Amino acid sequence: DSATPVPRIVPAPVSMNTVPGQSFTLTRHTKIAVGSRSAGVAGVAAFLAGLARPSTGYPLPVVRAGAGVHDAISLRLAALPRLGTEGYRLTVSRGGVRLEAPTAAGLFHGVQTLRQLLPAKVESHSAQRGPWTVPGVAISDYPRFSWRGAMLDVARHFFTVDEAKRYIDEISMYKINVLHLHLSDDQGWRIAIKSWPRLATYGGSTEVGGGAGGYYTQKQYTDIVRYATQHFITIVPEIDSPSHTNAALASYADLNCDGKAPPLYTGTSVGFSSVCVDKDITYKFFDDVIGELAKLTPGSYVHVGGDEAHSTPLTDYVKFLDRLQPIVHAHGKNMIGWNEIAQADVQGSPATLAQNWSVLDGNTPADDPLATAAVQKGVQLITSPANHAYLDMQYDANSPYGLHWAGYVSVQKSYQWDPATLFNGVTEQNIRGVEAPIWSETLTNIHEVEYMAFPRLPGIAEIGWSPRAGRSWDEYRTRLAAQGPRWTVMGINFYRSPEISWD
Ligand SMILES: CC1=[NH+][C@H]2[C@@H](O1)O[C@H](CO)[C@@H](O)[C@@H]2O
Image (cartoon, rainbow, N blue to C red; front, top):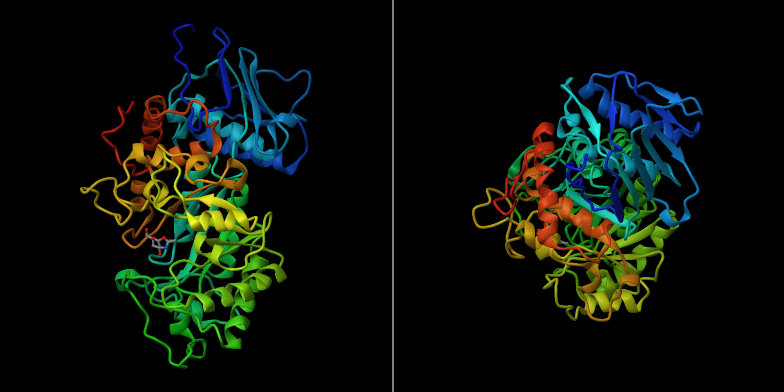
């Protein structure tokens, strides 16, 4: 055991000690023992069984934990206040694996760590040869930020329910807990709204490049939300406004100031569309849309976009957002917007969040008027610096997909930044967390998304989860190398970046 290398986990746990001579090997007799009847715990046990039964070929029955139960992976809720609502404690010894957490979410995150302590072939869907040995460790872990998000733009190109679910499988491996779905834009409307049916049937009938597009029925959206919940991920729906609205404007002539519906749009420029700020129907529209979406969304946030309103005069922009925020609140939700919303009279935390997408150095704090305006209004930030966290940016000039308006983003560049040192006058307390957007102008299916997201997304998940102290690219890249074989077993179409000496 002394030869056992230190396990390489992403995101890095807050504290991990290896305990030589205390490794545990799963066998056909091993059980999954649950310490309570809680549905949440049962859900995590079912997740673990679903992961390990096919690959080990072992029965791994789920049993009630008790004094006589050993040779088990035990999952139990425990009052461990230091670990917050998402942390866990994982102890592996010769006698078994003990996973404890204050919540089921913590147990789920602990299972993601346990997963990485097992050989990569545990990810296989067919029985593999063992041994299934977990090294002896004592881990205590909890996240730095509560918002650790990924965004998928399903508007420029449509992604099916199964593709969205696959992305949820992948991001939840790295303790991401928010999936922001960019559901509407100039090129497409992707969610059925019963009171405005043409939004989906017509506004969702195409996409960038002129393809067939598509949309989620409300039943399908609910299925995605349910699947996300099982992975302890909150869905944040975005209806972008007042710009990025051509699909809606094309669907209903009355929404346009001149009463004329523009044609559907399949290009990739931005900022040319705007809702009609002075028409009352505009606010009825958003009241209906946000009302239906809010009912389908258990999460407490609705994202209203607000980016690139180049065709909306600033006074109109402020007027529009000041009328939109009460609509969001009336439907029991808090509002998020891209950082331009800080120009409006947005109310302060804990309600409203501003998602900053500025291009920033990442190592020397910059003056960012929109960030400081948000903070002055008591609005917390979600940080998505475009030249570090936008995973639709090409890795380099040879990348087969992606854009590079914010520059090329190498794996190193996507990792070498910190939310707390992006802006002057903005401290860690002003930051709710991080989010890695993927915009789909150039991405037509989940395999192309995977190429852009892996290997860069796990590093942003680490920035959101792990302690800031001691984080370094040289140390991280060796841990990242261990993820490659896992993605190969899972069939994830990752970019084998030459920056990493893959296992
Ligand atoms: C918030 C934001 N608005 C723009 C910008 O990010 O760049 C994206 C491409 O990287 C583009 O798709 C999006 O419409």
